[in-house]
Amino acid sequence: QVQLVESGGGLVQPGGSLRLSCASTGGIFSIYVMGWYRQAPGKQRELVAVITSTGTTNYADSVKGRFTISRDNAKNTVYLQMNSLKPEDTAVYYCKAAWGGLDAWGQGTLVTVSS
Image (cartoon, rainbow, N blue to C red):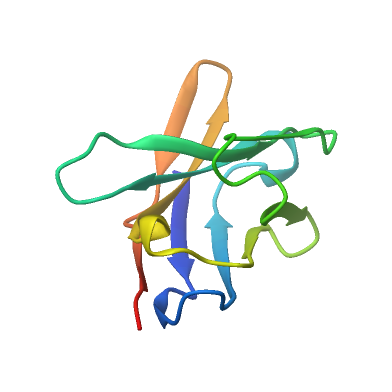
Protein backbone atom coordinates (compact mmCIF):
# COMPACT_ATOMS: atom_id res chain seq x y z
CA GLN A 1 0.00 0.00 0.00
CA VAL A 2 1.40 3.36 -1.03
CA GLN A 3 1.43 6.03 1.66
CA LEU A 4 2.43 9.65 1.14
CA VAL A 5 3.31 12.09 3.91
CA GLU A 6 3.78 15.80 3.19
CA SER A 7 5.77 18.19 5.35
CA GLY A 8 7.27 21.66 5.21
CA GLY A 9 4.18 23.84 5.25
CA GLY A 10 3.80 26.84 7.49
CA LEU A 11 3.37 30.59 7.69
CA VAL A 12 5.57 32.74 5.46
CA GLN A 13 5.58 36.40 4.50
CA PRO A 14 4.90 37.50 0.93
CA GLY A 15 8.07 37.18 -1.12
CA GLY A 16 9.36 34.39 1.08
CA SER A 17 10.19 30.78 0.32
CA LEU A 18 9.22 27.33 1.52
CA ARG A 19 10.19 23.82 0.49
CA LEU A 20 7.59 21.12 0.73
CA SER A 21 8.52 17.45 0.92
CA CYS A 22 6.45 14.35 0.23
CA ALA A 23 7.84 11.04 1.39
CA SER A 24 6.51 7.82 -0.08
CA THR A 25 6.43 4.37 1.47
CA GLY A 26 5.32 1.16 -0.21
CA GLY A 27 5.34 0.45 -3.91
CA ILE A 28 8.02 1.46 -6.39
CA PHE A 29 8.50 5.21 -6.13
CA SER A 30 10.73 5.51 -9.19
CA ILE A 31 7.92 4.58 -11.59
CA TYR A 32 5.35 7.02 -10.22
CA VAL A 33 4.28 10.24 -11.81
CA MET A 34 4.34 12.61 -8.86
CA GLY A 35 2.28 15.76 -8.59
CA TRP A 36 1.66 18.63 -6.22
CA TYR A 37 -1.86 20.00 -5.99
CA ARG A 38 -3.38 22.70 -3.84
CA GLN A 39 -6.78 23.65 -2.57
CA ALA A 40 -7.57 27.12 -1.31
CA PRO A 41 -10.60 27.77 0.91
CA GLY A 42 -13.76 27.72 -1.16
CA LYS A 43 -11.96 26.65 -4.32
CA GLN A 44 -11.45 23.42 -6.22
CA ARG A 45 -8.23 21.47 -5.95
CA GLU A 46 -5.84 22.42 -8.74
CA LEU A 47 -2.67 21.01 -10.20
CA VAL A 48 0.45 22.96 -9.28
CA ALA A 49 3.28 20.89 -10.73
CA VAL A 50 4.01 17.39 -11.96
CA ILE A 51 7.15 15.35 -12.55
CA THR A 52 7.29 12.10 -14.49
CA SER A 53 9.40 9.07 -13.74
CA THR A 54 11.96 10.35 -16.26
CA GLY A 55 12.10 13.83 -14.74
CA THR A 56 9.95 15.75 -17.18
CA THR A 57 8.18 18.58 -15.40
CA ASN A 58 5.13 20.73 -16.01
CA TYR A 59 3.72 23.67 -14.07
CA ALA A 60 0.55 25.64 -13.71
CA ASP A 61 0.91 29.04 -15.34
CA SER A 62 0.35 30.73 -11.98
CA VAL A 63 3.54 29.24 -10.50
CA LYS A 64 5.88 29.07 -13.51
CA GLY A 65 9.21 30.68 -12.73
CA ARG A 66 8.54 30.64 -8.98
CA PHE A 67 8.05 26.97 -8.06
CA THR A 68 10.29 24.02 -8.84
CA ILE A 69 9.33 20.36 -8.50
CA SER A 70 12.03 17.74 -8.11
CA ARG A 71 12.37 14.16 -6.97
CA ASP A 72 14.97 12.01 -5.24
CA ASN A 73 14.27 8.39 -6.07
CA ALA A 74 16.91 7.20 -3.61
CA LYS A 75 14.93 8.86 -0.81
CA ASN A 76 11.47 8.11 -2.26
CA THR A 77 10.71 11.80 -1.92
CA VAL A 78 9.35 14.57 -4.12
CA TYR A 79 9.92 18.23 -3.34
CA LEU A 80 8.28 21.52 -4.19
CA GLN A 81 10.52 24.55 -3.83
CA MET A 82 8.33 27.64 -3.64
CA ASN A 83 9.90 31.07 -4.05
CA SER A 84 8.44 34.57 -4.31
CA LEU A 85 5.35 33.41 -2.52
CA LYS A 86 2.17 35.43 -2.83
CA PRO A 87 -0.93 35.59 -0.63
CA GLU A 88 -2.84 33.79 -3.39
CA ASP A 89 -0.55 30.79 -2.92
CA THR A 90 -2.22 30.18 0.44
CA ALA A 91 -3.74 26.70 0.35
CA VAL A 92 -3.47 23.15 1.56
CA TYR A 93 -0.87 21.46 -0.61
CA TYR A 94 -1.24 17.78 -1.44
CA CYS A 95 1.06 15.37 -3.19
CA LYS A 96 -0.21 12.62 -5.42
CA ALA A 97 1.38 9.50 -6.84
CA ALA A 98 0.02 7.99 -10.04
CA TRP A 99 0.88 4.68 -11.69
CA GLY A 100 -0.90 2.17 -13.88
CA GLY A 101 -4.31 3.84 -13.60
CA LEU A 102 -4.09 4.02 -9.82
CA ASP A 103 -3.26 6.88 -7.52
CA ALA A 104 -2.61 7.78 -3.91
CA TRP A 105 -2.82 11.08 -2.03
CA GLY A 106 -1.16 12.51 0.99
CA GLN A 107 -3.01 14.19 3.83
CA GLY A 108 -1.91 17.70 2.87
CA THR A 109 0.17 20.44 4.43
CA LEU A 110 -1.03 24.00 4.97
CA VAL A 111 0.84 26.90 3.45
CA THR A 112 -0.18 30.38 4.57
CA VAL A 113 1.32 33.44 2.92
CA SER A 114 0.57 36.51 4.96
CA SER A 115 2.23 39.51 6.51
